[in-house]
Structure formats: structure tokens, C-alpha cells
Image 1 (cartoon, rainbow, N blue to C red):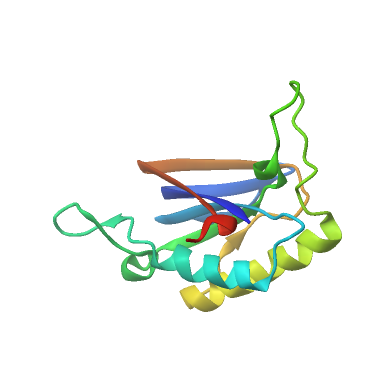
Image 2: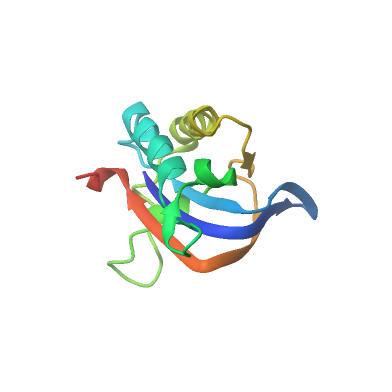
Length: 150
């Protein structure tokens, strides 16, 4: 799994002109799932994401986690994170998981993040054409790949 994590002062997902989810201070997480991903990847990511110390403390040092600041989380599935651009000019998405594999994992990711955070999270809609809007705070943007945990 690949995630792009952005610290935001606000973020939202709009589908067909209607806001599906909106958060204030917190994290926007774009999630890319590949065929080889499983429950172990989800569990590691959920713990890591909510505990990342990327929010400022009283001295403006990134020393607080999403849990520490009581922030919100918005999770959006994004298969394009697994694009291969090595050959030609048209990306290949061969590594991205098929919907029958990715959708259950996306739903498990939602449940895992809600459990770790202790409250509901915002989401997009799997497979939908979404408009994602955000104000990146910092800017702070991290990329993590569960295949590179060590």
C-alpha cells in the first residue's frame, strides 16, 4: 500500500457536485492498494498514521500526533498511486489491485483507522469520480509505502 498523507487545515471530497465528506484540522490520506497488500499492511498503516508526530507543539516543533491534537482524518482511495511511468507516456496501472480486492481492503482501512483514532473518519467513495479539495498546512506531505517499512 502506498499512502500520501497531507496535514491540512481543512479538506473535502465532492462527488457529482455534492460534498460527501469534509474535515477541519487533520490529515488527508490518499490510499493506493496493490494486489499483494493485506491485513498486516492495513494494521501497520493505521497505527503509523494516527501516531505520526507531524503537528506543531507549543514551541512550533512537529511533535504532536493526530491523536494528540484531536484532529480529523479523510481517507480517499486512489489507484493512480501505483502508476508505472517507466515506459512511454501513458501510465500503467498493472500493480493497482482490482476492485474486488481493493474495495474490501479500503473498507477494512476505514474500520482500522476509525478504531485507532477512536472516532469516525471522512471518506470518499471507492471508484467514484471525486473532486478533492484541501488546504495543505505547512505544507506537510509524506509518502509511505508498506513495502518499505524497515
